[in-house]
Image (cartoon, rainbow, N blue to C red; front, side, top):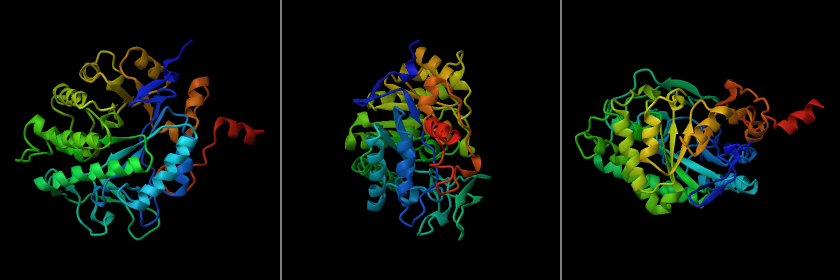
Length: 373
């Protein structure tokens, strides 16, 4: 029987071998002071290049944008050079790879920056109990409470837009096939979107259009820099990560955004359900509404297995299906899904640990069979 998950799809003028996407997942493996991806990162992603598309981990666009220890950036020459090795390895293996551009906003700590500057956000409204990993003089990160953010001035918002444009240029220089702007999971753009966090009085606060203005101006600027077809946006409607509250009117709020992204002709809209629940509800109205507002390539993520992926694709709910943690322990996830092989479990203690263990040492089916023999 024909399975749509393994059919080809055109994204931004590039033909993908299948509709399986490796979702962006932070792995915190950068260890040197330059915060460039280490050599083993090239192996990690090339092992998973059978995915139709890899969206590489959230990558800070500036020192200010960082919110976790050991996350590689995309704002220096050394980082560009490190990522160039990654894209070369993935392309050599026949894959396609985008980079997710990231600013954490208020989710952070001053120790993550050389100048010890505090996190920033739409306002000074901070987090109550959220914690972030920092290197507190030791070899391994420790979790500490987020520090109170400093509200951004209007002119600083525009400087961050320039950071994203520069990061997009750097990503292209590093060989990425495109970029995805991270507007999900309670990070900076999501904070500006949220009426409970954003109480600004300038053009970036107040009305719905003003609260989305920062993201849309960033998307427009990045699209002008590298081409709209190579730009995607990730959102997480109804998400509560990092102490966010669900949008009071998600159909209106996210419908507005999806319609504006359609007009900007972005390459894709990546819809993430943090709980893996509403995105599978056939009686729900949010996903069909997003689909109606955005006719371009839509990536769906959150709680998918092979059966659910096929059902979503056949129903026309999305065009590509993103898998997250299953890709950690199954570098050959596409093959396993194709033949119905069991999926290996991931080791949760090594997801963010650092080093090769739990990163590049998960075997493929072929390698596991040889070892067993």
